[in-house]
Amino acid sequence: MASIFSVFKKGLEKSATKVSRAITGIFTGTREYKAADFEELEMMLISADFGVKAALDIVKDLKEQYDTGKIATDADLMAELKRKVVAILNRNRREIKRAENDPTVILMVGVNGSGKTTSIGKLAWKLVNEEKKKVVLGACDTFRAAAVEQLQLWSERTGAQIVSAVHGADPASVAYDATSAAVSRQADFLLIDTAGRQHNQKDLMAELEKIRRSISKVLPGAPHEVWLTVDSTLGANVVNQAREFIKSAGVTGLVLTKLDGTGRGGMAVALHEEFDLPTFYVGLGEQPGELQYFDPEFYADALFETKA
View 1 (tube, rainbow, N blue to C red):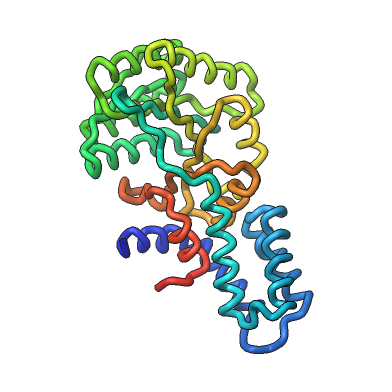
View 2: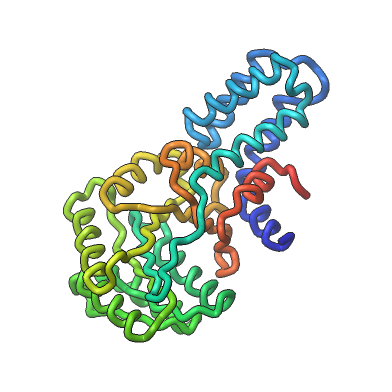
């Protein structure tokens, strides 16, 4: 488990530098802490993209505990801050919904450049190499040739099979064919890539519903999961974006990408506070093994540097 934590620690290094060292700068030694210190902590959490609501609630509770003597030192405060963050990140946490006998279908959605295709490739690698599962990839981003080529490379790299179509083909039709193929080939998982779209493009958002209907025609009850990939470098700015996808696409969970390239690691807290959706995976680097199943304890320990 230590090796997994090291991936979290390395991937969240930029966020940890911003967050934990800023907190240490505010709360240090044994001096009495003033209201201004807690206001500074509040602003720091907001600037690190914890979200206004989470930052206000967390700091209000910390100040009340300090004022009543329940926490007395900077170490107490850091431990309680970590506990509160873990509690938020654990809300509605659950295992991946897996089909009992049929392929488990996971539909990946998100805006352009959020990391859908790369996340699918890394997830295929993990399922094939670590869980020894049979995986089919559905290349339903038919508008971007590079996306199909990228999935083909992941197919070759992982041994996962791929179902694709000509450029410009109907994505719902490809989803139907991919689901049929996954069933006939007795796959364990079908991972479906979709074209990137902005949350305010109503016609493209409606297309996601058409894709979902095509999948369910072949396999009633599927897709079993609809995951929204969230570009972590955008910080709390993704909240409005996520709200529309959740409303229109039936999102059941999150995948946080590019966490290693940002100091905005607090945005995981903002998303959980806002939507109570589970995060399933986090992207902590470029290698396949750096897509990690989300662990709130590891995440908070790395973010606040509370574990060596």
